[in-house]
Length: 568
Image 1 (cartoon, rainbow, N blue to C red):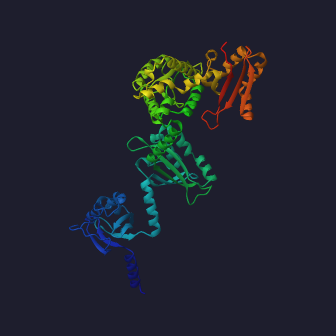
Image 2 (cartoon, rainbow, N blue to C red):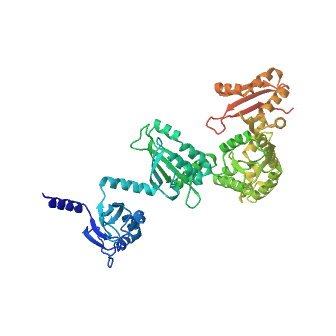
Image 3 (cartoon, rainbow, N blue to C red):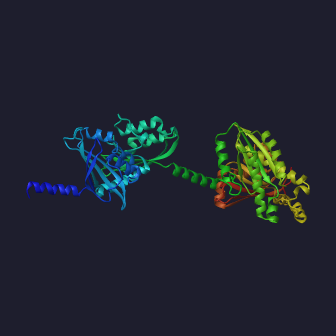
């Protein structure tokens, strides 16, 4: 094979590897095809200028949208002339084009002869298929570019970076060459929400990153609020992954930043729904007893200047459930809850039992609450619903449990007064006269307990840890002891033992009041029995039972006093 044959073979090989080959005058746009692939060639009527031809390809969507901006630069004569006459030998651009057989990755290049000049402005436009490996990589990078704001190849050993993609407000300053400096400046310029600044800076600290990847070669992620182009902030996620050339001595990583705002907000909403389901009453959507106990502990640990409690018990719920069905009872409870929401729109409200509601306020005084309570009673009475209610308050130097105890005690007194004074007409619930009569006669379950109270000297639900109580029945003299003891059950019991218990049994009862001793005995005996005599010779029996560990109040116990309890 002589030289001419060899050159001819090389020319055929090179031309054969091309899809399209055109001789182009970059000054006038005139072009002549040396080779044209039928699938690539488009016949646009009247178009004889290469720049116009390329613009038509883009406008008629033969070029994928994400590549149009860069592609159209090559349809700008000024841009092409600047490149061609700027001393470069070859100009290459990679893009994806639509064809009848589907998307196709192409390499577009401009080959520039040495003698090319404004006086001899001819060059060669070449279109080739992209190789398979680089096409796969380009496909992957194209997909990633749609998802991510920023893609970097970074090295935390050399403190350098290479930009694969960065949107406008993610671009580094021209003089910044260190990745640590770029990450820091990006945050300091207000691109990271001030509340997330510390998290972001700690996450991007070199030592933190090196320590993580020295122990495990897994993705390291951080979420923060990133300033959006509209000036607001959206949640973004920064991911770091080890590169193919990573070693502990060469911390080479890939850095990705993507928008996760909708995903993050959905997660927050779901998380809040779980919390609400856990802490809210399913029927009324008020906070439940679990939430009530947690809030009281938090409030008591950091007592505000003022705490006011409103304690409410709904009269007649049990009868309504038994005689008219639970739906009617649910309607009553929802009506009470909705009324409370109307009159206390900014306060925390709880349904802590079947028919018990509590409102806690750090702003309203006891007088304020009692004034509002008058309007609440009037509103509920329009639906023929009635409540027993009481208010209590305390200041910074007291305990929140004192306010709750005072409110509950006031509610109990109000309930007794209700049943003592209420007429038959006030207790009516339906238009059915027989049901009205039954309701009037039967009244409330707790009233029934009061009728059999002669069998008991006292029945209390006592929280040992908080030193608080709720009661089913309490004699008047013990109420007085409780009030003088600032609603501390333990202190009231000490006063009871000192004043009413025979000296022979005094020390044993005092020992039982020690919570550690009581816990020990409940653990061993399950039910604690204690017999004693009062100073008047009456024999008494005390039974202390621990409520199920699965209950919300794991420290709550039941104290049952029985005997011929005669007020002294």
